[in-house]
Length: 626
Image (cartoon, rainbow, N blue to C red; front, side):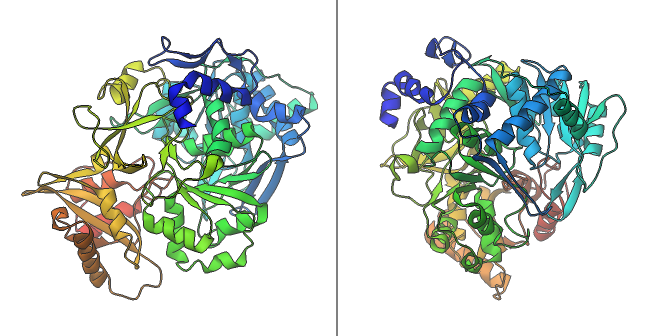
């Protein structure tokens, strides 16, 4: 399949595009002369909401569940059929239309994991408006930066979110953000949640339920607006090295075609089956695989407002799978490691019937072999790692369960998906032999669904992704491809440390450390050294119930790395900590940890889940805050 896509990409993607409903078929499948590196489905017109909702209702599947909402933090559960989803989305689209939102306008969505977040995204798409979802609970400054850049006509927000047992009021953060931002939306529509009702500002703020009820009473409705296949569906901001976030643009046609193909080809799901992505709509994974892909494909999507542990325990995921008949779960390795730390033997799984569960998919960060093997053992299903980025919108590499699962290679994210010509390059931009570490790059053009540009910043798009290796997209990741064509992504390029002239992967060291039976989680960073330039420093979190002394475990970990990687690693320092600093999406904040270790000044990352963890890391290292 991939060879077909490489040999004749236009024919391959023309065939894949037949799975989407077009209002006007594309004149060209790929136009190499358009955009920065070419554009997919030039001349085509379609609507994302129609493809995700209306067409399933029109074809007699309106009674099928579209979204299953499961919120252990509030005790709420709700099943929304495709008929019900169409009604909700049409009403909200009518509300937005009455507030002046039309084709090409931007709407910022600042919401927790509630069905209304999905309604909001689809209502924008129905109107041809461009949504920009900001992760609920992001700081006022981060929200203000995004509002200033995208300049929304309307903001849709909730009064609060719930993080475990903690209620996070969103409205004060939104008020502060609007105070800071030069761009001022014409209106804010606030979903009042009973856990923390918000005070509305007269003239600017509107009550969500009131506006929707009025639209319902008036019998209002709006049809789907045709947009160009190359028109933006959304802008999603990702962290930038300069501190200013980058607005990743997602075009409509290529995205829907690629997502629709991936549901069957990669994930092996059939229409009508239940697919659960345990992420947040604020991240790209949530955009792609909670909202758009399952619904466009006609599956049922689980929208879960809870945690992998503590809501109420480490069996939370297994309860959801059992209760809702989930066929495949897609989550981050961090979630699995949290579950394993609390329930290392997987005893809680026995409480639930997982007979319908077929596959576990992992992505978002490096999945160490130890975690994959643990999950295989306790769940007795294939555990499939795959790799992609906010910028690509769907998997660059994976193991195509729907086409016929390939053998799993631990530590590998699988093989490139159709449309991606992945190569490993040296610093001069030359391809390196199989098994050799280098920069992971993708030969242009990128596959459908990948970003065509950054929001109104083509110069930054070029400098961030295209200039280092002309003719290629620079992923910013380091790794190698083995003789069988499997990709091993070892970490970000800046996670390759140089120890006395030897280029070593911190991901490779983490893989070894995770083998130790007492270690639940780990991270390795490179710290400054006057002699060797850099030396590795490991941080470990121990499993619950471990009785062995941390000092003894640290010594054993050092010995393990020296045995498996060798003295060249110069691995001598291990620090036991209670937890690792992470973003809300579960990525370990290695860069900030490194700055603390190197006694460099650092600022609090906007995406951090719990700021106090950094002080714990500093204390463990005997460092003061920079």
